[in-house]
Image 1 (cartoon, rainbow, N blue to C red):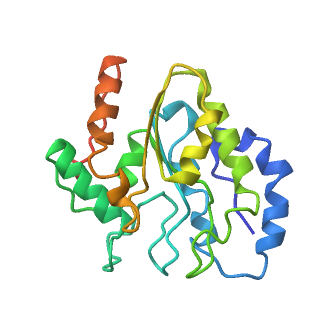
Image 2 (image 1 turned 120 degrees about the vertical axis):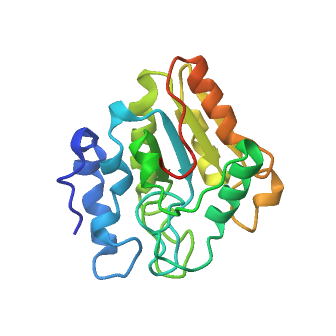
Length: 215
């Protein structure tokens, strides 16, 4: 079901031999988002050594055509409501006075931002329905794998914040409410994740992220 040939160094995680087959069995014959070809896009696009920042969300968008395999990212030609991503852009403007028109976040991933969800699949129209089918083992292994050198972790929402205990070492851990319309006013707006992370990267001798449209 799942093509893992493009995982690169991530393929060494035990999850892909020990746990993925059971998840594939559970999903066999069911409809879910994003398409199987995009399920592991976040890992494929941002390899372990390239990760500077991790943004951890909840689960993919459960609207057809909206989830593209990167947490919070939406295809540029989607044309529907942005919901969480729209609120992320509002906070970006408030935080750094930057505007962004591209809804695809491929350029963030290419700069070393791992855009991962706590569940990598979701049934159409059923948010959080795949939260307990085994994806948590992958997320745990990814976070533990990234612990060897300092990185910035942005954890948005309760499911993401629950993984803070898996992050050990001299990292930046920035947490807030989820940017969804249901929770954005409970601490997401005003949390200033983008300036906080960029200042931490600069202080650590790294290049900051260009959060605006790619140059």
